Length: 378
Image 1 (cartoon, rainbow, N blue to C red):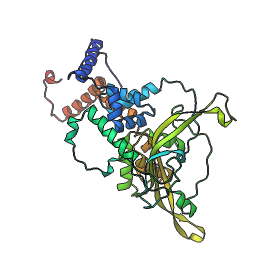
Image 2: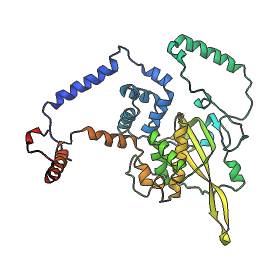
Image 3: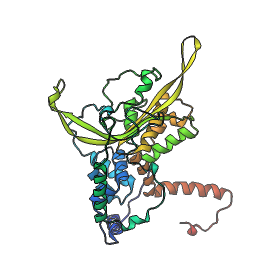
Image 4: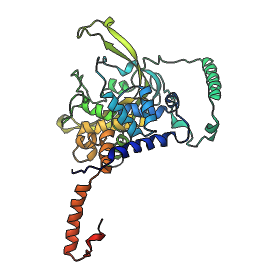
């Protein structure tokens, strides 16, 4: 593309940046990052997921700097992540080790360990609570104290929350799930190597979990509504904390005591079930179940479920629908790529547009529809 230099551009840009800061501060108040962390949990989780960097503090700073724009905050977080050295690789995480805060199944009413509703907007009335206008720090502390005292008086009985069995094991034990062998191949790292098509499943899952929440949700909805007409059932949706361990610098063959616990991360995991017709011997057909999988940082349930739908679509690879095409899906859910490419249209395109404009004028002139006065043209 052709661009032209603009005289005085540096001064104009500096003034634009000043104006941007003015717009953030013009009401004379400063939004504290700690308040963003405390009161914008869903936005924090979304930005961490799309930015592929788990840090609530950094996400809060990015949100403040971006004035609440998720796309800009994700851009800032990804740019920062690209400057960080990679000192360790974490050990493989088993989701069965999750300390569960919320766990539901739409497939079975009674599941081992029980349904755990946890914190969710699903059961609230979608009515604006105007009382929040008068909410104070002192009132919040009083409410928390009452909540803690009420919780301490409840006798909780049931399964161990950090060792709950997986719901889909019920179907596995009956042989109703499609067989899935262990794959111990080292995952491909999309942050270190450019993606080449066809992709591996590890690459697809990495791109999906870091994809723009709205884009992943929209494409998952498209698969449900018409493009493939998939209608899965949520086998299990769980939200909780996973322990993360890293090894020492000794390399492979380390003893268990050489691994170090560095903290927990909150994640959302979704396993969805799809009926699949399987061709058996002698032309006989049977219906079994396939699985779609999704996992992302924080509590982001809609994205995790939509991700599991797209995972199933891309595993099937039916070329008849766009949501089954890995290039179509994976290349269009990247927040930075999509936002950046659309935003670049705001940059000067004077030369290319002038060329198009001249072509249009010549075409119209040949039809006798353009006046002779060239001075009226911009």
